[in-house]
Amino acid sequence: MRRRRLALCLLPWACTSDPTPPASKEAKASNEPAPVAAPTVPEAPSFAEHVAPLVYEHCTPCHHEGGSAPFAFESYDDVRDHAQQIAEVTRSGFMPPWLPAPGSGEFVGARRLSEVQRGTLARWVEQGAVAGELAQAPKPPPPATGWQLGEPDLVLRTGEPFMLPADGGDVYRNFVIPVPRDPPLRFVKAVEIRPGDPKVVHHGVLRVDLTGGVRLEDAEDPAPGFDGMVFAGAGMPDGRFLGWTPGKRPDPGSDARSFRLFGGSDLVLQLHLRPSGKVEPVTAEIGLHFSSRPPTMPALSMELSSGEIDLPPGATDVHVRDQYTVPTNVAVRSVYPHAHYLGKRIEAWAALPDGSKRSLVTIDDWDFDWQDEYRFVRPVRLPAGSTIHMDWSFDNSAHNPHNPSAPPRHVTYGSSSTDEMAELILEVEPDDPRSLPALDEDFRRHWLRGQLALQQRAVQQHPDDADAHANLGAFHQLLGQGQAAIAAYEQALRLDPDHVQANVELGIVMMGEGKLPRAVALLRRAAEVEPTNARTHLVLANALRKQGDDDGAIASYLEALALDEASAEAHNNLGIVLEQRGELPEAARHFQRASELQPHQPLFGKNLARVRSKLGGAPG
Image 1 (tube, rainbow, N blue to C red):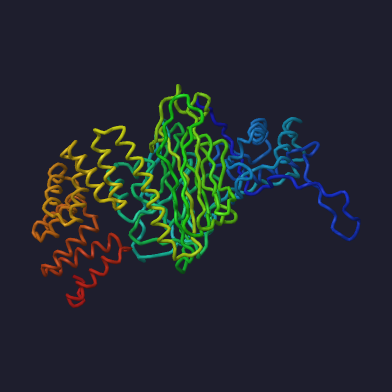
Image 2: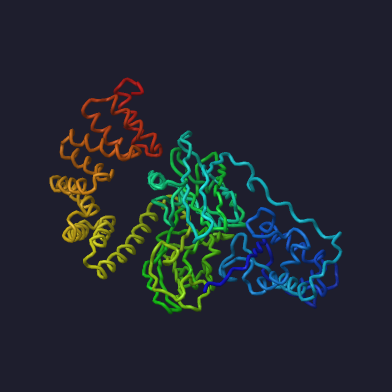
């Protein structure tokens, strides 16, 4: 049975991790400043003198009326009513909710109480929670209202509320928020996320989508947003991690570390929601602070991960690992470990070329409920040739208090919270910004090789599964391994001649090799099997255009747009065919629409400008 959580949240903004050492007895009695005595636990602590300042600083920012915590700590009576609980959770280390082990990294906003602070709380409770002179107690801080970073330059909202059911399991809801089209490009140096009701929002993560894919996901779900833990192709904007957890101060950022925000793109805010016992409307606001200039310190997000997760019931210490060697000098800005309920421990470190080891993060007692991003006070600098290691261990036994299954069941890799994942997301900056594209490509291939190995094992385990062979072909294709991709797709089609993915992807490979008749035949088969698939009609149109069949290409492009009017690629490619046929006004209309849908794509704008020039500058 899963351990019931104590509803208490001590969130210090800054506290000493250890008392200072005693001053030397040999200190000279001269004009030197008198040594400062090390802090000690008071002999007779009172609320007014000792506990109120501690609680108001470290607890009340969340424990206030309307805050994310379930009850307030704004008076002596509030704190006294929970005194025993406070002493227990702070003594055990369960609170404050801070997972990294001491010494594993120096992080911004570390939520730790010192031994003296914990001892003060414990002694106060042991001695009967004495009030003291309440008239002399400090006043509780007013709850933070408004935007913590000041008034944003732009506020975007999730729109119509999502109605969270009264009960049931956790919900991961993705809200799609369109970015205004004008201006076409801005630079964002800071983001502040404000959930409408922090009591039901466990945490939030923000991504950006440039493809329009999340709009399709949103359109298929009748309620606001769509469910799931994956982001439908959206990613971290220019490698920057953006998220919200209760009590966490937003990063003020800087002009140098800003990221690009394209007009017409979509923000995707994923909120982890927990039912409260009654139906709750869920909304959120996003405040954007702009920079007046482009960034000078670009970043890349790296995701070490492993799909080799196989946790039989009763297993107590199963390890999965990944590692990556950086080809250039980098600085690690932050780390974000991620696993689900069976995660037990993570250790991440870098092995440097000189043989030394540098810790990135260690969590000895993983807790899915308190996962967070950890931003270094000082970036961890790694020279080229350093190898970043990730080592996760899992506990699928009945002794794991977080295990959601009783009795334990067999668990493997998957995106559901009852499956398991093993990830470490790093935000890194290359010392030389010019090396970012090469670093991005090198890590992309590392990730693809890991996915390829995962698919090869899936094929070995399920040799008669056409999906497994088609997915294997996709990763061979992405790695540029054409013949291996063809073999995998051909095997998928032997198992299932109507497999749409295999027909479409093999058709693309055949187009690349100039085998257009075969490509067209494969793509026609896919369109017959699944006539409502807009992408199939788009790829078929591309093949027909290459084959010189303009009429067939135009018909297929129009079919693709009838199914997905927001396909910028279909509008652009149709415009190309129409331009070649001399139908310039109609070509300009489709180029215009492509530019509106994806204003960050310069090719669409160039095509539009070219046709307008031919038309004598008319808008078309």
